[in-house]
Each structure stands twice: as structure tokens, then as C-alpha cells.
Image 1 (tube, rainbow over the protein chains, first blue to last red):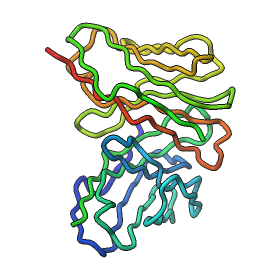
Image 2: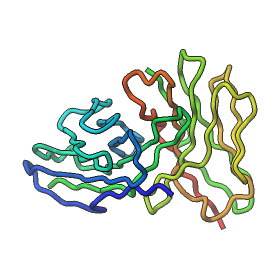
Image 3: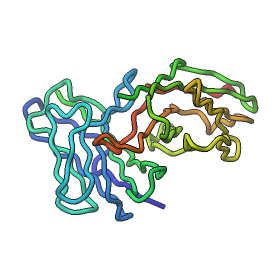
Image 4: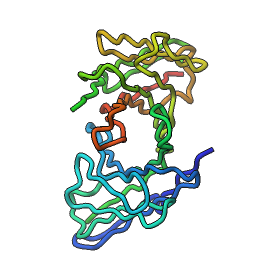
Amino acid sequence: DVKVTQSSRYLVKRTGEKVFLECVQDMDHENMFWYRQDPGLGLRLIYFSYDVKMKEKGDIPEGYSVSREKKERFSLILESASTNQTSMYLCASRYQGAYNSPLHFGNGTRLTVT
Amino acid sequence: AQTVTQSQPEMSVQEAETVTLSCTYDTSESDYYLFWYKQPPSRQMILVIRQEAYKQQNATENRFSVNFQKAAKSFSLKISDSQLGDAAMYFCAYRSPAGGGADGLTFGKGTHLIIQP
């Protein structure tokens, strides 16, 4: 089974702090994604990566950046955390070789910015 | 851009009965992929079932099946013999084969399914 591991389940940070959310997958997947999940809004794509050192903006990239230095690891960075970034963050990976291949998700990081 | 609509924010069903969750989508493409994901209280998003638009036969996975109506752009999920463990948020999702720069999925807002014992 594919395992996608997010480093923190819960995180509390202060406004203005730099925040790193880490995600690691163990199946050599090319594609990795960061989603944000808010009640009543579903999941919204922040950033994704086709492969190492490659990144693309999703639907809501403002206030976020990403890093993918190794294939298995995809980091989401909040340069200066704000209260409106309090949310659940979900990382996912996917095998690129088949269009019907599903996303495999981590358990999520619930971030609170105070 | 594609949109996915789940019109039922919450559904409730008695244990052992059948429930259908609705999903509609808007697209101009003829080929695409549809998914249903389940998110239990543990928060892990789990793939329930998937359907390729070019396949006329509805996908089935044990107690889970879909009713895919391509012309109506409808993709409902039927859960038979509901069990307590089926209680979760259910998300419908769409993927375009063209990618459009994003190979991620477009998700609906979710349906919260409650199972009454």
C-alpha cells in the first residue's frame, strides 16, 4: 500500500511565523499535491509538483510556496503565517503513468494560526 | 474550468439500508475521470470508486456502485447495506485527461453521511 506521511497531525503557530509542512511518500510517485480543506468549501488545490524541482500553482497559491528537492518529499511553506491560513492541509501523491490512477492522501495537518 | 457540485451537504440513513449520494459536474470535455473519496473521522481520504467517462458500464466495488449518466453529467454513488463504518464525508472529484497544467482533482464540497444504528 502507498503510504503518504505528513509530519504533524496538529500544529499551532503564531501570526507572522514561517511554517513548514512536510510530506513524504514511499511509492516513488512523480506527482505530489498540497490541498487545503475548509468546511463548506471542500478541497482546494494550493500547489502541485510533476517531479523533482518542478512546481505549479494550483487554485489558491497566494501566501504559500513549495519545495521539492527529493522525489519522495514535498514541503509546503507559509512564509508569514496569517490567521486566514488556519485550516486542514492535505498532502497527496499520484502515479503519473495512468490517467485513472487515484490520489493517495496523508492524514492531514490541522494548522491553527493565532 | 470544471466544477463539481454535491447538492446534499448531509444525508442520513438507517443501518443496512441503501443510500444514494448525488454529484453533478460541468465540463466541455468528452473524456475524463470521476472519483468518489471517503473521509472518515480519522481524516484519511480513501478512494471508494472510480469511473472512466469512455466506459459505459457503471463501476462497482462490493457494496459501492455508481450511476454514471454522461449526457446528464451526473455521477451518483450508491451504498448498499449501509454499515456504521460507512459514516464519513464523501467527496466527488473530477480529473481532466488534458491536465490543463494541473493533474490534481477538482473536488465537490462534500456530503456528510450519517448512519443511524
